[in-house]
Figure (tube, rainbow, N blue to C red):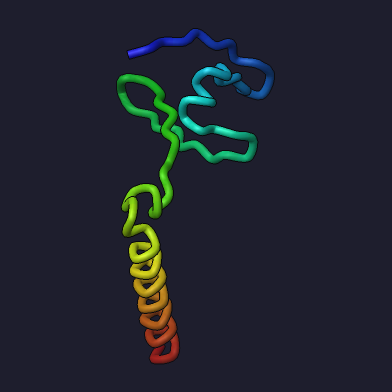
Length: 82
């Protein structure tokens, strides 16, 4: 496990060392997840569905789209019945 000491600047801004950004593919505009638990704070680089599923990424994205469409239709149907 590597450790880095960073300084907190005005408005809570911290700088992630360049070495870490390169290694994790963090670029300007990247979104990170900040996880707070009893042990402290962790920054997580979320992975896209495509990255998570590798070669089946496109298939996984299509499944996610179908689920979202189905859920949307379900909500609309409930709204109409109300």
